[in-house]
Image (cartoon, rainbow, N blue to C red; front, side):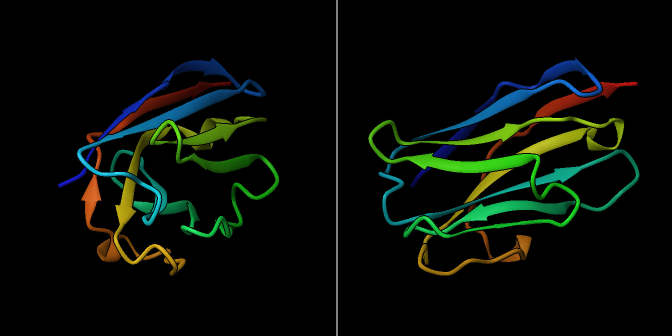
Length: 124
């Protein structure tokens, strides 16, 4: 069973950047798809970005052009590069993986394994 650990969250000023990491253990991520989701206080978890095992990506409209998802199979780690951060990006960010990695999915319920989350706070 794969296990995921996120890191890289923190406090940043609006306009700044952060890079989140999602380190996997137990299984290679090569055949998995990966997604990033976020949840702000009092709100439902929402899709941010995903990448298929073949490297195809998809983004939420709210982050398109500012965030970049990637996956380094050699390091068994996924990343979410976040630039031009806005206060509305403040949330707990979660990475997740899906065994059917050839699919791109924005649906949280279709992911098989989740990390514990990392807090991102963007001050105005």
